[in-house]
Length: 333
Image (cartoon, rainbow, N blue to C red; front, side, top):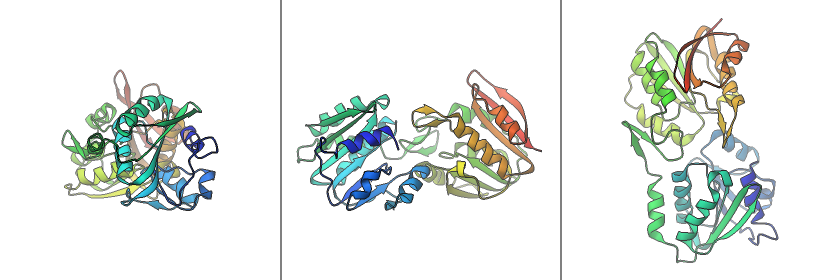
């Protein structure tokens, strides 16, 4: 449970003053014990681990952001500016007349700035600050600035980066990640058989693997962000090799066995650095590699992944590095 969610729920306490209506939509849904007392709440959550938590708590979830109108829309955005503003607009489109939009964000994600942005478009804003977060909300009174919300809604439209389709809020949505580019520049040409890309994002590294190694029989993309995976489907639609797409939390393990695995593992949980997240990727990769299989990864130079590779029974070597990144190749003994 995040601090932003805890702060959001204060809006529905006696001091907050909002009475939960009979129906609500939660964009960026995260479960909270108080929500089980609500009559009906529907959630949309593109990130697999959070979506699983929402469903396991017993709440209904939609695969796509649902259409319709609600008297209350909750928004718990990530750290992307375009995503947050776009979600504000998507929420407004789904509000009934007189409905309330409630947003919560950490201060480190610019909560105060986003509150001011919403205030300019919606008028009167109420705000609660606690847990180093801010919850703010407004009532749709028919006087909100429709032109501003149209501009924000356009931020969610697909965009192009170097010929690839991307979307606001996903990893590296405005440029090719330099770490992935470095790994792509050092990929071998002899990969074959069944290959996986862990944390595949919108498919840049997968596309490079397929171009470089035509003897690959099948490539499996594993990605926790459903929006990024949808972009990857578009970006890899014209490759002749078999490609499968999996909305999957890699830290739970992989369902198959592979001749090779490539990855640019994530190392952030929300705003914080989380080295254990990358280590979990390495553990999953090691367990899914055939004996003699190859792991090819890029990581920030300061991340201590070498010990994790050795602990997983992998013999590694450093192929290249620059001021920021290192390329590690490993073989399963």
